[in-house]
Figure 1 (cartoon, rainbow, N blue to C red):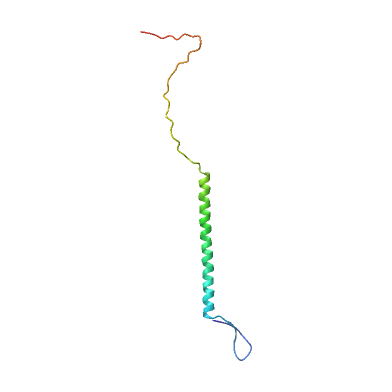
Figure 2 (cartoon, helix red, strand yellow; figure 1 turned 180 degrees about the vertical axis):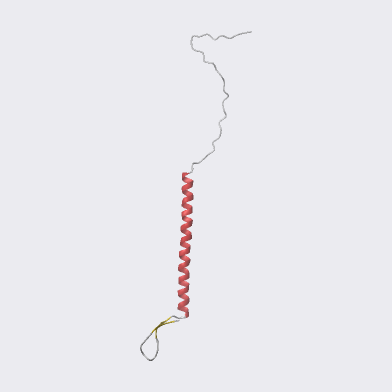
Length: 92
């Protein structure tokens, strides 16, 4: 592949610069690495955004921790007797 500049001479077009096969291969590799880097960056950014959203959901969500249950004390019904009044018990 050659870049050619048209000249007004009778000799025909004049070659200004010529790209060799190793040069073309190097350019192709550089372009492939550049695209790979851009795609990799997009994937890393996407993963980072998902991780950030997961962490924020975890922080905002209330934490439900199970605590050991205390054994309940049996309820004893007691009647209130004001001071000065007799306690009358009916027998029989």
